[in-house]
Image 1 (tube, rainbow, N blue to C red):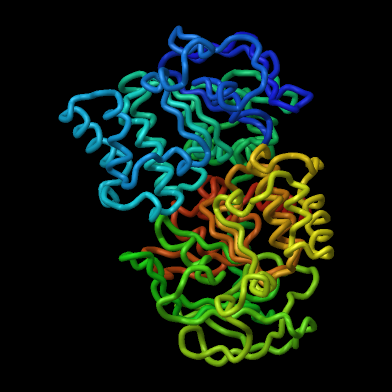
Image 2: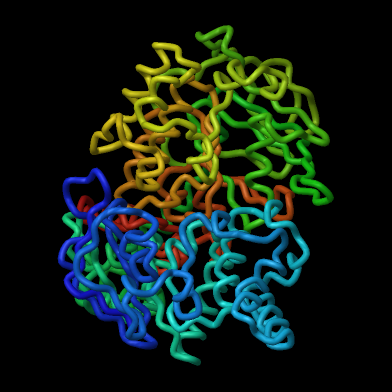
Length: 593
């Protein structure tokens, strides 16, 4: 169905090719997972399937790409639309209509299908992807995850023979991701659709895949059975890393298979005992000074109540993970804290920057929804900017006597209180080159520009040339650039909305290390439970805009399978969340012998 014959591709102004001598065949009805480091060429390979590379990207392509016997060099992308359904990393970029139902109907309408056929297909996809309740919603009013489901549905209504998906679950909550991937799997098994999918959250996809294509950093590629290819890869999912740590050969690729392997492993009793002992230790109240307070915050987006009466306290150096299903209000809450989204009710206060040496007095506070406790690491690093005083009463039952509302300040001053990195970091990039972006950090302030350059160098293992255009960067590089720009203002509180989109496993590990070492208070909205287990002190869960859970990472992630890590599911009911914790449990046994 798909054939790459010695394909090499080099972007304009690049010296080395992004793809090098790629020989690849994907058969009809095959599910092929594309894996590789950030920037290894995965998106380039996918875009070559329908001719977007090189027709719209520019550059030089050598070799040939054929789909269903048609050469992409001879057939225009629009003429391949009925054969190849393509969904890129930014779903909103492909929208051409105003509402969900109109977007789903657009492709069959353009193909000239009969109204009854078009209507049937639209209803089928609305049910298949759980979009029926959103059919009349404006696309711009949807959350990032909801937009992603609509984008996938909009290509499925054309009934393509080939489905090409670039990071399709990056903005989806675990339940929505399972629903979407399950729907794709039914198309593969029932009607023989061929799937080529690039995904950094490999743990969500690998058990569906027939084959895995590894794209290496030099642009070459290798393809084989999932277990053979993933073993030893830097981007391997936690379940494969656990298998390597426990020396299981071949590695299991599903939680069910891994649980069976662990049940037969003589070390299971040790893991159970150490995990159980660890869970017995109660978490202590967080005694660090409070940096930010949210009291009874409510937000509306048009006619939709997005956030309802949410109260929180965030402490110095604390990393709070904000979780919940798509459309639960996570992004709305972050923008309300940042000050851009008006609040219907409630107050937000962040420690102001007038007293850099904060007073070390604070009251221990509790959330109106349960004790606010910490788990894991107390983060070191420089003091958070701002004056921290006492807080009267509990969340939602008293007014804050210190700090400033970011919404009441002009943007330059507000940036010193709160730094925001949105779901699509490129929304904050305005200039033609990376150098211009860095030079204009902080409104052109020399000190801020210098800090931005230093931060960018510390966040990336490679140097980005100043002449590079921001849109030519990988998702991870754009994230690092925007993060450096926001942090150049030295905000007291950092807000990150889905920061692991486009990041591979090593990239997420680098981001986690940076978050832990920075010592800055942060609220991170994410669906990435593996990242949360590695970096967060505390988890807050929203549902329909209401705060329904607030507590230690282990307590919240262990409360439901939908929020559990792969390791937690394999080792349940121990409460262990990561491979590192399992290895520490085994090391504890060795130390007691």
